[in-house]
Length: 188
Image (tube, rainbow, N blue to C red; front, side, top):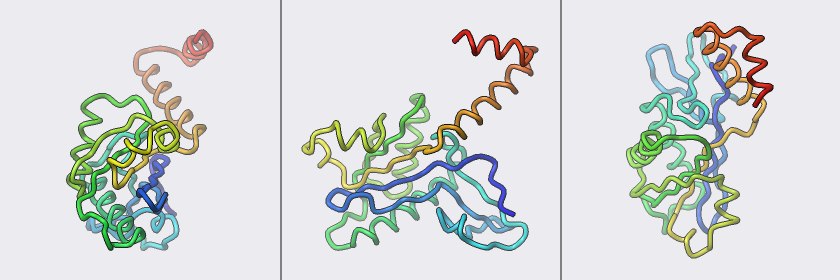
């Protein structure tokens, strides 16, 4: 039985002139020795031996495992280049990464460095969704990027439930009862 501690982020990669060429979940399957057995949707679809560990290196848009995230993005970028056709495609693309959420400057810098380690020449963090970027940004400005990577959570219910569990845990550590917490939330 596959057990992942939290809902993985969804990754979409858009390539100028080709559209969205990759849609994968941020997942890895690791052998008991730590060797990668599968990446992305192949983890959900595969049948792996007992003892296989399943990890999602991104949690709520944040990088939770840098080494696993680098491996995953390197694999996704290679798949993207293959899907878009290698002819005329840069080996080290200029990348925009769409991460919508409350990330601080350290987390934004981590994305820049992570994607450069994974093979990007240059990375810009775009604080909007991919669809917002494509609708709101002029075609001229879009031409700057050969590849745009979107990191998102499509299921807000799961996200809210995860955040609520964290909030309840935090409140109980500091002596706030559930009833008091509910009252506080209702006041918001």
